[in-house]
Image 1 (tube, helix red, strand yellow):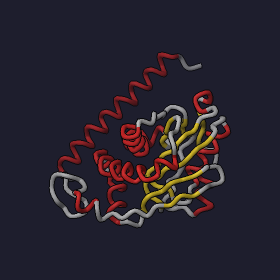
Image 2 (cartoon, helix red, strand yellow):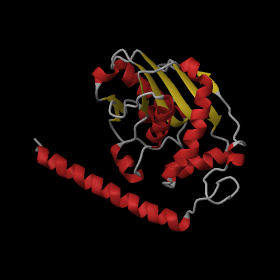
Image 3 (cartoon, helix red, strand yellow):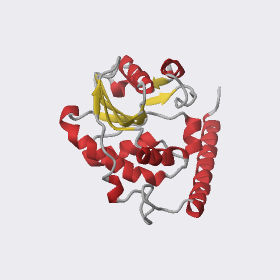
Image 4 (tube, helix red, strand yellow):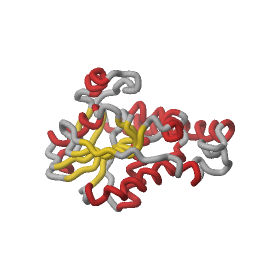
Length: 233
């Protein structure tokens, strides 16, 4: 049986590695990735107002096998939006959550009445190793922006990935579903019992990841789960 002191040592080591990675990342970005609009190149901001207004909504409201309803607001085919999300997820530009969060909140305002007030919101979780590699969970950052604006509490300690999965990007629909099957677990069932929850992600394509998250939440007793994704691939 592992001793508690050993667990704390592992946690401190992982946090130390995370801080080191973040410091290296910030230095790297300051040197080779200066702040400029990803649409027109204007210096000083990641997305200028003019370019933001060029990103046209492509909203959809759907139902899933387990999801009571899912709201998506933009197409991932939008090249500027894709560039912003790619920078946030794969180039480690955490500050890109600012324009993306603003865009997401703007569209959520339009459907707030359809969603109603949830008990809390839950970001789609990353596996611990991927979280350490990236330094943050982009879905959690977007959830924080939603929470700050609407006052909906955020819970990031009720749902976790039970195993690391392959990236969904290059997989077909059936393979995506198989890849994430059983990959999520609720770690605090009492927290979700009879609750209305909004699940948040940056991108959904087939909906397989969200459906697996919702399946776990409902098996743990959640009353209603709505999904919110910035883009649909």
